[in-house]
Image (cartoon, each protein chain N blue to C red):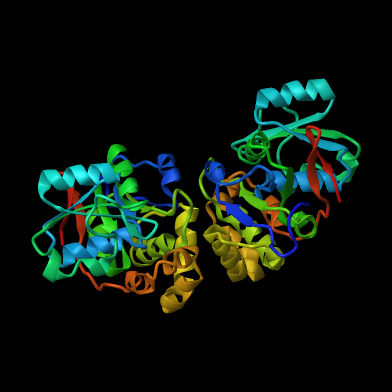
Length: 245
Length: 245
């Protein structure tokens, strides 16, 4: 890296995709965060031996890429598998017995869209983050000595708390290695420190909990706030996320 | 109001102007929040007897409107009075001895822009909120039985903590009167409750403190987090904010 040792790289938190254009994405490492459930599912699939994950930003692209690669297609809208795709967005659908050595082609409401935005804006590296692979994200970011954008996927461009909580967890662990002049990061870190000891109870108060609980997805969400249960590092290379850990 | 008694009106917090288009502004009361310092200064000027305040969204419009109305022109960029305007954005510039019975024409970096956005999007009513007029805002919102948008002005479309803190203070007082399905509001309320007993110390950790402290504006900012020091209700009527309290 060309960065001098005397100055630490910057770290910013982007609270929703609609704010991404306000930040310097080029030459940054962008961490895509979609706790419920895209990036938790991606970590789980790669940890369980998936060959690679191709994130696509529409159902049409998912069908097409599934045909082209022979991969498993996955995507949901409103808690149901999208017609034409084969599987959903739940981490529980991707145990080792099913996903090992397979390619997963996946589209989600928020996370895969933000990932493509970051790529288009010239991010130096794109990784995905979730509580199941928290420590891997921390270790990676500390080792790079490059500017970091923690990108929260939110919900249809609105702010959500669970993605911000994950950003706060990362910040708590890496803040000594970065220069942080960013109220979003301060807020995220404070929110995490306030709630970190009772995440399973706290998430039951969130808007997203109520939306997904209506589809019977409570167990998914509890898994999605479990730390380091799927240790791996999803990193984007040549059109797909692979396990870079 | 056509609203039935059995259902409470909604309340949302918009964390930056760049997210305003994601919300239903039409038929809502929009509270413009720009704690450092636009809406604190507006409350102070009206409390001190200003006839009205004309918020304009550019320096050019400020000069023109100042000529047309004989009003006092005010606006700063980077801590200095904008060339062509007469006064700055500090609440301390508008004591009763100076501002009583006068018209103030003011432009600011964030707050006046958000106000004009809300007007263009068809807000039913636009008021401004700040800690110096906190209780007036609370009393007004509780009396209306209409949907509320708490609009944080942020900093150049980025999130800031001080505006969110004020939103949280309002929510803490009005939440029993509204239906709130909004993570931004939950976060704002939690942040406020975490920090409310030591605001003067807490604000010294924020990005905006450091920016304005470089211009020697520490006393301004401490005033801007003092509660109910300028009790009034700036409400937009016929092109200007007047005191509706």
